[in-house]
Image (cartoon, rainbow, N blue to C red; front, side):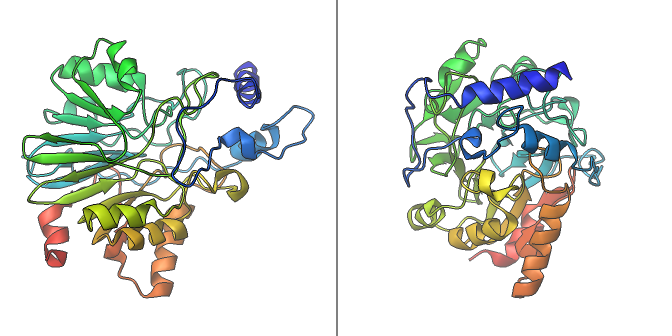
Length: 343
C-alpha cells in the first residue's frame, strides 16, 4: 500500500506548475502529459479514481509462441515480437531491437509500477548478435535501464539510435556508441538507412524533465525492405507526411493499446480504429499491432485491442493479413508475408 501512495504522490507532484519549461513540442502544438488530462476530484487527489479502475483490469495472459525459440537456424528477413513495443528484427542486413524491455516492471523501481503479464517471449540468451537498438522515447516502458545495461554487457559494440537530448543518458551508463536524432535526421549503417520521424507524444522520466528529450518513430530502409516503428503516438497527420516524404512502408509496427479512458489517453495513444487509420495514412502494405498484452497501463481489458482491431477489419472488408496481431515469440517471415504485396 505504501508503494501505491508513493506512485500517487509522484503523479500529483508532476502536474504542478513550477516545473521547468519544456523544450520540445508536437507538430500540431499539442503539449500535454498524462496528468494534465485527469479530471479527478477524489479526496486522495488526482489519479486516485483512475488508479482504482486500473487495478480492476483482469490480469489475463495472452498466448505465447515458442516458434522463435525452437528455430534450429535463424532465418534472414523476419521479425518476432518480444512483447510490448519490443521487436527483434532482421532486415536482411542487420539485427535490430526496438524499444527493448525485458524487465519485470515498467517503472523506475522493480518494487512497484506496472508488472508484466507475460514473460519476454525471447530471452537474452536467445538473441542473435545485435547490431542496432532504436529507442522511440524515454518513458519507462520503452527505455528500460536494466535491459540496456544487460544488452551492453552482452555486446558492447551495439549501436544505439536515440531521440535528441537522450544521448547523455546512455553516456552516463558508459555507453559511447550512441547517436541522437532530431526529426527527419538520418544515419546509414551498413546498407540500411535509419530516419527518425515525427509522431505525437511526450517525454518524461522524473519530476523535472517534462519534454526535455524528443520522441518519435523509426523508419528503417534498405534495398530489400522498408519498415517503420511508430513507438508511442496519438493519431496525427504526421503519418500522411511520413508517407509523402518516405513512401509506403512494407511493414509498419503500430501501437494499438493503452487508450482508455479516452479523455486521458486520446492525444498520446491511439485506439484500434485510429491505429487502422494510421496504417491507411501511411499506405502501409502490412502492419503489426504492438503496445498491448504485456503491461496493464490503462483501463481497457487486456485482449480488447486485438478483438476491436479484428472486428473493425471484418466490418470494413479488410483482409486480416493487412494488420495482424502476433503471438509473442511467433516468427513473421518477410518473404512469406510481404512478397505478394511488393511492387
